Length: 265
Image (cartoon, rainbow, N blue to C red; front, side, top):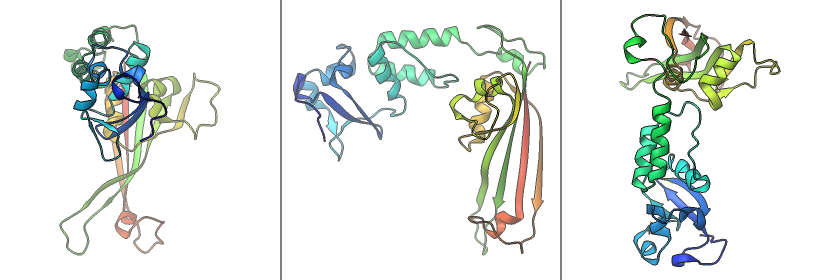
C-alpha cells in the first residue's frame, strides 16, 4: 500500500486507502479526523484505533459499511455540509450511515432536507384523480414524458427448463428537454440530440445510460409523474434471416417494443 507521506497521528499515513464494503477510496488522514468525536475520528486519530481496524488482502483499511453511500460521508467531512444529487432516493439510509459514524450535524442536515422536501404529491391524492396539485416546495411544470424500449425474449432450448428473460437494448425518452433533464439527471444521455442550444423544446432523441426500466419508473414517480397510458407490440421474425452479431435465433424471432406515457398535472 502506497502511503504517499510519512506517518502522523496514531501511526497512520497521511494518505489513507480504504475498502468500504468493497468500494475503494483514497482520502487524507486530515479529512478522516476532521471531526474528532466521530467514529472515523476516533479510529484514525489514535493508536488504539489503529489496533482495532482490520485490513483487506491488499492492505487497505476495511470498514464493513455501505461503500456507495460512504462517498457522501467523505464529502461531508471535506466540506462540512451535505450536498445530495437531484432525485436522491436514499436519504433514510444515508441518515443511518451518518448515525453509525457518529456525525450528528450531518444527521440533522439530512433530516432538514427530508422535511423541507416531502413527497411532492400527497399519498391520498396520488391515485384519487388526475388533477393533482403539487405540494411544497414551489410549483412544478406540468407535462408529458414518454418512455419506450426495444427488447427481445429468448426461451429455453433443447428441452431445458431454464429460460432467458427480457433483454433491453436501450430505453428511449421523449418529451420537453427541461422536464427530461429534471427527472433523469445524469442518467440521461443527450449524445444523439443535435440541437442543444435551445432547452425550451421537445425531443425524441434522448436515451438513458442504463437499461433498468424500474429505475426509470422510480425517477418518474419521485418527480410526481404518473403512468397514464401504455402500449406494446411484438414481432415474430423469419428464423431464416441472417443473424445480427450477438443475437441468437430465438432473439431474432421474438422482438418487442413497449411505450409508456407519463403525465404530471
